[in-house]
Image 1 (cartoon, rainbow, N blue to C red):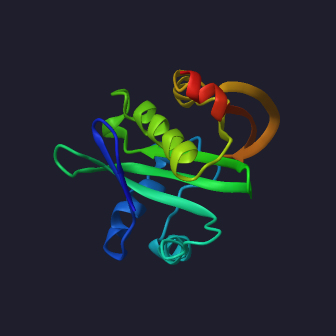
Image 2 (spheres, helix red, strand yellow; image 1 turned 90 degrees about the vertical axis):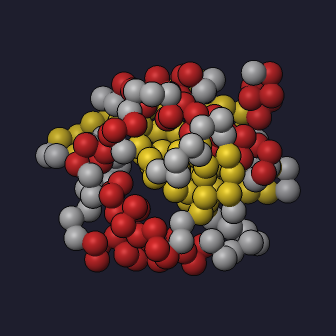
Image 3 (spheres, one colour; image 1 turned 120 degrees about the vertical axis):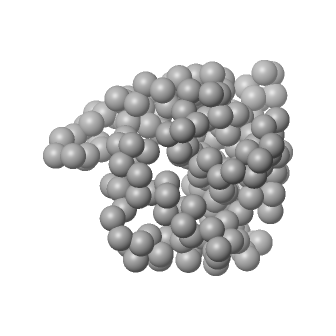
Length: 183
């Protein structure tokens, strides 16, 4: 499965992409605000990557979609994007999106482009009716991306993320299909 946006290509991971995948989850800067901690050894990440590869072959009731994100101009890998199904039914469903970028690509509008394309996938391809995203409340840049994408703040969850010896708040934003269609 592959999708495109103005400057980016989103494609499902292949076996040979493990080092690209690892470059995201082992990067301290990227994982600073992430829910999960930075991965140290490759072996720690292999079970997750193998689940992704197995999931790529699932068509009925697929629980998630994970993409490597590449520049369409050069094919260079720049990040990770995913959609996780929280609840689905015949009238739509509810899903969560996530995104990580390699630091060299921060501040260039790629995160907003990723979120906008993920929303289009969620609403047009996966037929969800609501999509949400969460971030550490200290990650102001991620919050700005959700706002730029037209997502509405649903709340602040107090001290739910444990990171580096302290508890942090989490922000949650969402958008409904009817709001997205009006944009």
